[in-house]
Amino acid sequence: MPVALVTGGGGGIGAAICARLAASGYSLVVADLDLDAAERVAKECGGTAVRADVADPAGNADMVARALDTHGALDLLVLAAGIQSDVPPDPGVDLARYRRALGVNLDGVVFGVDAALEALERSGGQIVAVASLAALGPEQANPVYALTKAAVVGYVRALSTPLAPRGVRINALCPGFTDTPFLGITGRLLRKQKIPLLSPDEVAAAVEAVAAGAGTGEAWALIPGRPAARHEFPALPPALRADGTEVVLKPFLSAK
Ligand SMILES: NC(=O)c1ccc[n+]([C@@H]2O[C@H](COP(=O)([O-])OP(=O)(O)OC[C@H]3O[C@@H](n4cnc5c(N)ncnc54)[C@H](O)[C@@H]3O)[C@@H](O)[C@H]2O)c1
Image 1 (cartoon, rainbow, N blue to C red):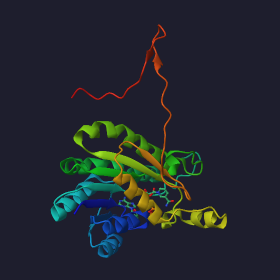
Image 2 (cartoon, protein in one colour):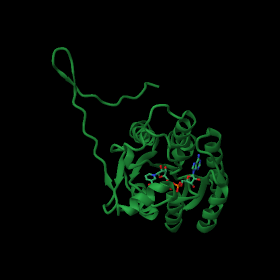
Image 3 (tube, helix red, strand yellow):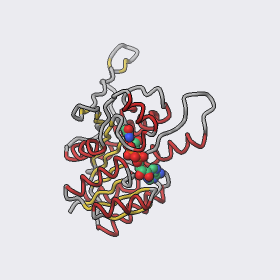
């Protein structure tokens, strides 16, 4: 049985991902800051619950250790834990909120990958990070949130190259507004304006579809009413030397 670890698995999109993956035959490790919520989901999925704050490297190490102790391997890491930034686009950034948003939404991805990498290398496994449409289009209302999610997409795209020879794939899914407690009062406003929302299960299905593909370093947009679509980033023009000849900019790896 393949083994999946889902961060933020205790609620919303993460819980829907756990349910889908369990139905598809995965053994589940449900990691969440809220242990009661993780235990509820783990009970429903027949999985293992672990309390982890993804902003803390030790929390990430613990959740991976639990997966390996309990199931002996890790095949799929889904990084779904995330929070609203609640940092308004006004002068006077609330430092604590700003740091917490970066801690959960960005450090949670970097530390999660770091903790799981050796195990994923052994299994030829993969990572799906849940970013957001806010990473791909302007999100004027919540720039700090958009910053964290754009950084996740940039990290996924850059990291895919050094991970490829190690046999580990990494992709990002960028869903639009999804009907979970995460939306708070925004959810009520969106519903009032009849703006369609994704269901958590639609997002979970897209995570599963991305995981079933063969690509790496991709960002998939998920827009209500439309199938998930790979986002195409425009190619950069070549650099020009002083003599006018072109140099194609290619990613390069350290010589280590
Ligand atoms: N709901 C949306 O409209 C929407 C849209 C696009 C992307 N997203 C992203 O999808 C992911 C899941 O969002 P959701 O709507 O399910 O949110 P949610 O609030 O319903 O659930 C998030 C879960 O993450 C957990 N969590 C929060 N901080 C954590 C931490 N530090 N460590 C471990 N677990 C933590 C919470 O306890 C909760 O169970 C997030 O990354 C969010 O940014 C959400």
